[in-house]
Amino acid sequence: MKVLMTEYLRIDLDSEKWECRVCDHEIGPANKGYKEGMLVYDRDPREIHPPIIDPEKYRFTFSPDPEWVRILEYYCPHCGTMVETEYAIPGHPPLHDMQPDLPALRAQWAKREEIAKPVVGPEVLADQGHSH
Ligand SMILES: [Zn+2]
Image (cartoon, rainbow, N blue to C red; front, side, top):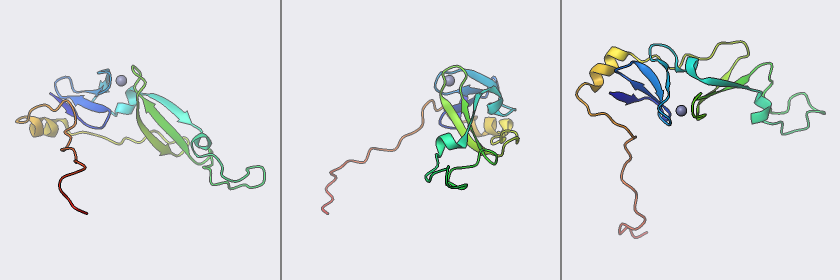
C-alpha cells in the first residue's frame, strides 16, 4: 500500500520508504526526514527576490539579506522534480517538517483502497442553466 503524502511524495507502507510520485524513485526511510534523500540547492535569496530599488544607493532594497535568510530547494535526485522549498536561517539545519506515525497510517489505510492519483472533484461546467 502506497499513501500519498504531498503533491510529489508518497510513502510505501510495505517497505516504509519515501518515494517520488513522479518517477517512483525510492528516496529513503519513512521514519527519517525525506529531505535526507533529496538534492538540495542552497539559493541566494536575492536571485528569487531581486532588489526593487538600487542596491548601489540603498542598504535595504526589499530583497532578503543573504546573511539572514537562505532559500533551500529540494529536488528528487532521480528525476529532478522540485519537491519542496523552504526559507531558512543560514547555518540552521533543514526543517524536519513531516514525521508520519507509520503504525497509525497503516491502521488508517487498512480498510481503504490505495489511491494512486489525487481524487479530483467534478468539472464545473460553464453552462448549467444559471441565468445571471
Ligand atoms: Zn523523482
